[in-house]
Amino acid sequence: MFKKNILLSILIFFPSFLLADIEVNNIIIGDREPINSPIAQYDSEINSYPDPFPDDQIILTIDKDNYVKFSDSILTPGQIEMFETYPETFKMHVYPSRRSCAVPPEVLKLTKVNALLTDEGEGINGVVGSIPFPEPTEALHHVWNHILRYRGVNIYGSSPFFIVNPDSSRTFGAGEAIAINYWNPFVANEKGLQGMLMSKVTHPPRLADASLLVIESLNALKTPRRAWAYNPGTRRVRRAPDIAYDYKPSANQGLTTTDQFDGFNGAKDRYNWSFKGTLKKLMPYNAYEFHETSIEEVLTPYHVNQEFLRYELVNVNVVQADLKSDKRHIIPHRTMYFDLDSHNMLVEETFDDENEIMAYREFPLINFYDQPMCLSIHSATYDFATRRYQLTNVRSKDIPKIQWRLDEPHDEKLFTPDGLKRFAR
Image (cartoon, rainbow, N blue to C red):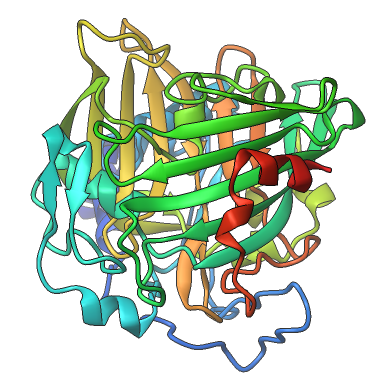
């Protein structure tokens, strides 16, 4: 009886953070096992990307009842804020960690040594098509690895976007885009460009054919971004120098800035950048079930339906961006979490001048194993002030696949102001 009482006392007073450590230590991040070719269940004729891990079981669910145990270890500040803001609905299903990300072998063959940062990190000199910094040692190495990760060559696709309000009402939009990615191993490139993009809004009707052309260089200081916009009302194309930094397109309804597209893009000169180390955090990863679920099922109030998201313990490189005292940007502080394996940004958190959190952002990825490459299936931005969220660049079985390597390359002459006018119509 005395021994039983001692055991009971130990269980009652055993610190909860030690129990959390025991649970976390049971989650193993193993060796990389890249999926370099389509799995047997894949059918290139349909929009589906079947789950390579259908037998994986949930090993832990974190919710309002136990998240505090993990707040000092594997959760990020943004995730903790999600639990505290939406205690009745937000949860995280944790699965085994599968390091399945891959890139084309041609990328790996070109990757030997680090590239060279120039002009205080605004430019880069390196082997085109490689992973620019295979041995990153500073903050901007991780940012450039994300920006220049392999994302196809000649690209065409369309995707919807949604803004979901707390009362379940929605704004729906759709767009279409073509792009040339110059940082790839398949096309010789000495243009000093990252790429060229043309996009247009196809819905709602009042914005239909509002179009944009962006030409992005490899050195934002020497050759700043060039952009043009087509206005369907006037049927004119004009230069758009403001489409950079914290410019907010009207379709975003104030929720995200231009330089938050694809996680982060564009010039870096308004921030001081610091590397906070490589940490183990729970990240949205191998989100095949979400990709295979209908859009109507995943759009729930406050945040996407967490039943369909998969989280894994992932090694992430954490980068902090703090606004310089003599610069202006509506986001004073940003924390970015980059996947050690694929270099994708998986999570971003934004903070105000008082370091109070403003928004939490997620970029759940899958391995598009027909390429192969790992990219996000959407960008989700959760705004804590308004309790709205924005879902953009949505990829799903409900949507035709993005074509990442067209058989017939885009005509580069199309990416001009006159070409933009033709594309818009």
